[in-house]
Length: 239
Image 1 (cartoon, helix red, strand yellow):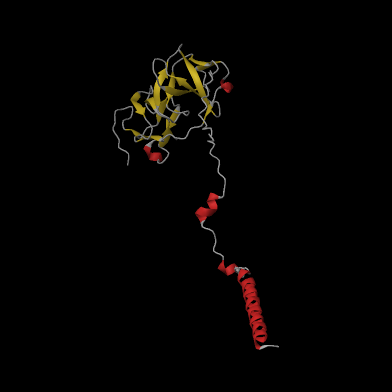
Image 2 (image 1 turned 180 degrees about the horizontal axis):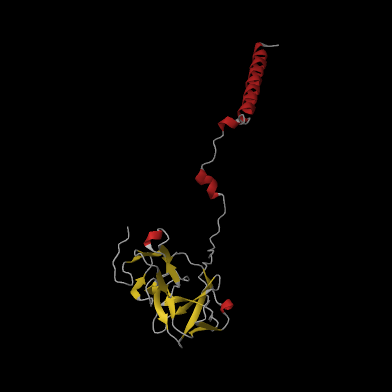
């Protein structure tokens, strides 16, 4: 074999190995890079995630509740009246004799009843000729009811009357009209002082012949009234 032929073969082999090496290198370069680990993944920004959510552009109207107007129903109280018979009747500010009188229902006059106390012993009335109201006892022969008071609304008092007292300072026994009670002398203390209803009273000395009148008094809630003169005109003071 000639030297030129050997040289050609050597050159061909070298070229072959060079081409083979480049082909392998190309294959390694085209291979995809390793997958990223979970640590390398950054979470998507909030704004980016919100863009992926489809939103509706339709307008939804929420009904607003409106006030319901309820037409008042006409109610009427049963027709009940009270009349004063055989005499006048005190109209008091509360349903008890211990309350002050604020007016008088005169004999043969009537008044409209608008309520009753829970025991149905007293009725609340419209005072005739006035825009005020008051209370009248029905447990007396001087009053007459027409109508059914049980059908009226009942009323419970929340204010109590203030007690009033009458004291006898003389040495004579005294009769109180129309309270119909005898007050002992001041020598019988403390029995010479009594609790009394508000009102107007006449005082008589029953230890003197003829039971002369010695005083006429007006008692109001919370008052303390003293009888200072007897039927002989003698003045005494309470100790």
